[in-house]
Image (cartoon, rainbow, N blue to C red; front, side, top):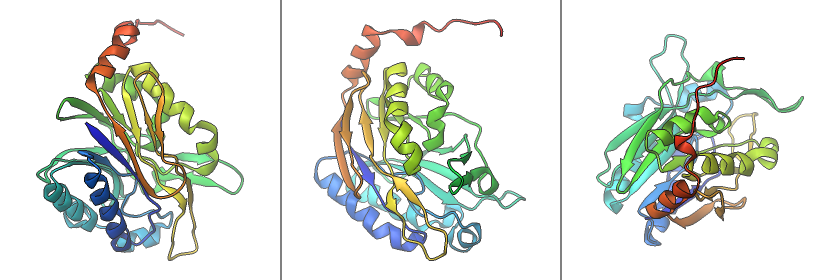
Length: 276
């Protein structure tokens, strides 16, 4: 199966982000991709909660979800929307950061809400408190696309290997990590973490990323690392999307997963540990 990682520089106006996203997906399908993946917060990159309250929609009204569902049906391809920032019905008004798998008929076959919230101080001038604006999920999600079982995760989840272990042991042969990674932590940790998750679990890791300085209509700007990566089950970087928006293609083979797990069958070697 040919997969395509779509690298974006989404701004904070959802209606402005859909046309370039759709254009890249069309181009990827034209190059033979049957499985297309977009990054985290495909619809809106913004750290301004007041602005998000104005422009975000609930799932049933979201224009990006509607547009990409229609496109999946038109092109007859699987689309993993890395995530959409959406309004929820939470009493505290927090949003959800939700990933979607769309079938070639444009139907939603799975959704996943990001579990681990990015609450960090990267530096004195770069801090994040994602949990203040987003409600965390609590369920690991698997879905099937043709000959692959796919485990859905999002960005900061990559630092929590137990999630990936549970997905792989439940049958995942592909792990998705759509992201909007900080440039500082991206340069230090991005490739290492993704390769580790692939090696530990003998699975493909597909990580479509946001990149660059994101257009904004408010005073709050954000920069992301880019470098969408496809990693083999043996830990090899198969493709790197660099730092410009665009398409990264990779061919997936289920036999490659079987071979890696046969050579190092660590998924069957977990032990129960007492203490500390």
